[in-house]
Length: 278
Image (cartoon, rainbow, N blue to C red; front, side, top):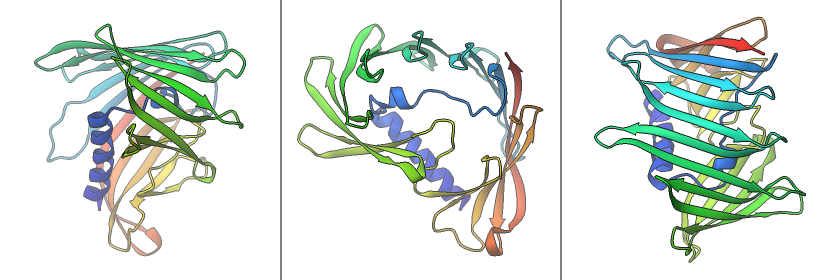
């Protein structure tokens, strides 16, 4: 069961890398942290694999935030302590994301750079154009259409030569807190689907995964939607600071008993966070 959940999530991640994310995903998929207290100034996260049969060095990610709580940088450090990825965001006075620069290291290739820019309609404050450059060259650009409710309805994506490459159509599933992005080729052939939260301050899950949550909204248990007694799942335990934000998150492989009773806990990995507030 754990393998099936892992395979599902890995497949979704792999597909997103293979196909590249939708252009509207650069707008919806911004890094945001659920915060229950004062605004964050910085978060330092350490990721440790706790399985005895796996020897993986811990890695570290450091995030910084502006006075409005928007993320401004995210630096990832590899096992040897060197920087492996560096992301920086720029916002306008309204707090709208204008630009994201991402430098990342690829083995046997070296450093690569991606630059995303978003232009907004001054009246609606919604995106009307999104562009992506890689290595200083235009890769894709998208024109965005807004519906009568003020939401993104679709985008038309053009490649570097100016030809229409994809059409992205959006469906909003309000009760599930999900925006579904359906991507088509110009001939209307279905290409792929991605999901994003409507409210980034709340959790959401892909449809193949079912969740149980603690009273504060943090995820307690994740299973495939067809899980039954005896199936495995992921179970989460947290420690919190005085602001109500978690500072330690343990992920366990577990077996499910009757009514999802937790059995045979096995610690898989731990994330610890050092949070500073403004």
